[in-house]
Image (cartoon, rainbow, N blue to C red; front, side, top):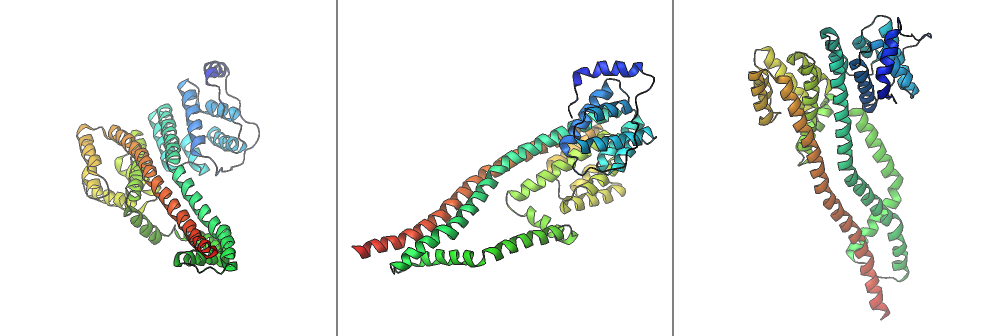
Length: 377
């Protein structure tokens, strides 16, 4: 989207001088766009926020967004929404009908429509996706280097076993050198890789496909999610990541005047992490029995004492939305810090592993060569 924000006031005045905005003349079929990313959402809500805040009506704002959109799939999605709204459907229902937007998006917009604060809700959504995209970028930057190192280590080790070691094996055979145990072990690894390389690749790909198929099963998810929490560093990082998602979505919903119980239900259906899902289910059950939010969440054992203490204060001061927003900032910052710490810890470990593996192969190769030197003497 390349909307020129500086021209908005001029466009708004021209639009208001017209008796009614232009309407697309052609029929637009209902089409979904599975590639409508968070970055696209951020731009959409930012542009709508600017336009609505400038006094332009929703349909006119949508039309301007359509005219400025260059991506054909996104444009078709916006045209579908525009047609639904001009046919009388509310904006929130039009978003829901496309199946491209999450429940907390169209539910928040529905609240904004009913309360007359649609522009504020749209601005909040723009900020939400802007933060989300920035956090995702920081997270990728933090973990990408260790992943590259690990991949490089695997490739180097595999290359040496498959190509380097066999060359020296032939030299040792020709000179009838007695091989030490370490060299024999490395040669066995090389033979195994040579004989079963295709089978190993097939097993890896098959395992990934099977895992991808069964991971949606609730029992499998339960085992995986609870096992992850027990892994040092990684477990704490994953838990904090999902807690940040919970506070972010809840802050958005409560800020849009959704009841806290309904917000918990919606977030529980949105987040796919069994320990957190179960904690939210338990909290909802307790709140239905009359418990307040802080006690209900605290009794689940999933949330830390910091969150519970702040929510207790929020209940006393009636500032639940504000506290969830601040908690979201804190947990998001914590996710970034933990990802950087995870990267700092992982990087030297991977370097040590690379050094040990490569050193092991080099020592295994040089030991027989020293023996050959002694023979020639």
